[in-house]
Image 1 (cartoon, rainbow, N blue to C red):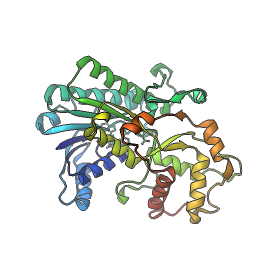
Image 2 (tube, helix red, strand yellow):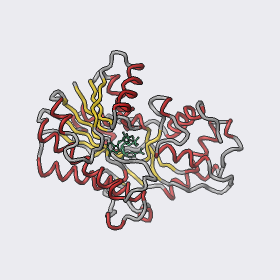
Image 3 (tube, rainbow, N blue to C red):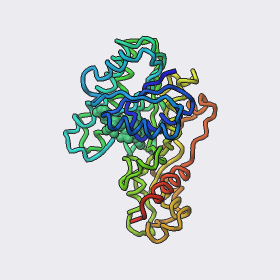
Image 4 (tube, rainbow, N blue to C red):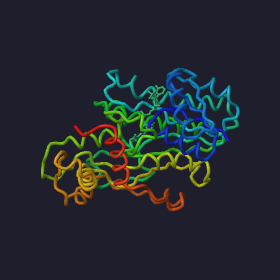
Length: 343
Ligand code: NDP
């Protein structure tokens, strides 16, 4: 069975590729250049010599009809996983160009290409985000976030680059759902709505001094100044990248999830908890990173992190057990510290 994965070079997408190849799917990835595609195929050949991975070039998902040629050329594609969307900060472009347009147009381009050229597709999974769900921090206390919650953010109110990213994800998911409702295609449409995605890179070679956008928050926390105060920064939720990858594949194999808005999370996320994990598990960081107030972590999570209930999706996924935050953080730093010394 052949699966198309857009944005195949991404942090999450490479884990999806890894799992698909283990399960013996044939995989076509879209990448932005030959050089990126060649690298990707070479890395995965090293791990799966018999695995069938190829790539097609889609330089910019936002270009009109960006995916038409790929779907025309490959009538064997049965499943489409759309992960490509801009997720780097400091882009130095107007927010609309940098985030909103590629996120929304990219999503509509893949759905239109399927509509025009790929009636054989049975399942589509789109990587949305907890960004499309999360409420304003001031409302965290009185909201239990579920897969029916929508972020109220409006594009007109966007002021920062982070808000632009967040809004782009909400508008892209809404555009996909509107397209689906209006066109009533025969395929099933699931989304994956993860919060902070943490975890190791699929290949050590992808570890860079500055990590990918979500893991880089862990790096930032390690550079907080020494303090014995409770560290309540970055209160959110977390999930491991390997679980995020799994939830892109489950809807293809489990009918109960085929149309699910899959909001997934392993636990709350807050700076103090991350510092506790690192101080407990990495003696080499002793004295180099802040300790904060060790015993305050649970209280801070309770007070500052979004409340959530994901039980309906977890039940449909057979009582799925998520990789813990501790495991995610440990795996990120083991991989990072094997390449770079702490500085
Ligand atoms: P990455 O930046 O690693 O992956 C993004 C991928 O999209 C890259 O392959 C990138 O290609 C591609 N891409 C971006 N813009 C374009 C464009 N205009 N044209 C073609 N390709 C493009 O991020 P992640 O793996 O973390 O993110 C993957 C998806 O998961 C995104 O949809 C993101 O919004 C979502 N997500 C991520 C979370 C996280 O915490 N990491 C949380 C929730 C959702 P290239 O590298 O060549 O630019």
